[in-house]
Length: 334
Image 1 (cartoon, helix red, strand yellow):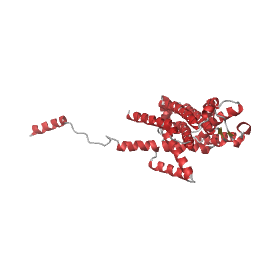
Image 2 (cartoon, helix red, strand yellow):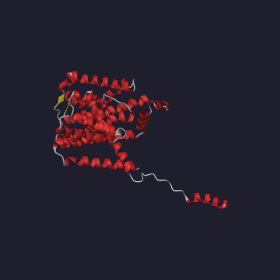
Image 3 (cartoon, one colour):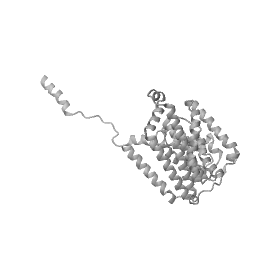
Image 4 (cartoon, one colour):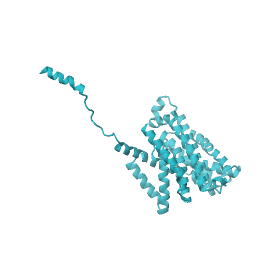
């Protein structure tokens, strides 16, 4: 109960800060904040696979890119408004995720990860070489946004609303019996199967759900950058949600969101003041793995458990009435 109250308070404070941030930030900082909001959804969608189901995928960026392309391609080839195109983003990514998941889930563990890597690179090559559809390595840029979304502040609130909806849906899903079943599969896949759980079906459902919301995040990116390009689908882009989840914490729904804030602010600070962002990122990851292996959320919980009130163990006092029979027996012997 106390943990739920603390979590609810934390989410309320985060929402208040997010709503008031545009009053204090300049335009450049607004775009940094938008990138953090997108990364939070991207990483949370990946945590459905890694943190809740125990599946390591190297193709998550491919579905992120598909979501971005769904918006821009609908605008270029169909003449749709970006708002209408956004509705295609999670549907297209989820549908392709379902089909490719049927292939990838024929294997488990390391071989599953290698299959996702191959599938992701195949989708990347399609976007990179099919110039008639995607304009190849040139990408698609200059997408015309509705007039209401052209100011940075309005666009930020729009992306924040989309992120809130996505996180709310994923939160409900992960707190449901479906989420509990995914955690059981993560803890012991074989035992879950012995209990009668259709492990492959649940893994496919988790894969489809995660890829659909990766597409949701990709659609948000299309509004942020007003375009899409093949590098969004490359396997190296999958490092972003992996690092974000590891920094924030795997075993917590809030972990990827906290990790997105930390990684986004760190990237902005380092790239403006230093040359080698990857060196700094590697150092941060090494420190977290060594000193906070569960991520920031788990580290904070451990500190709270150590320093919290009432945590000291004391020897229970012996009730007086338990000592009376012994005393009476002693008197009778004397």
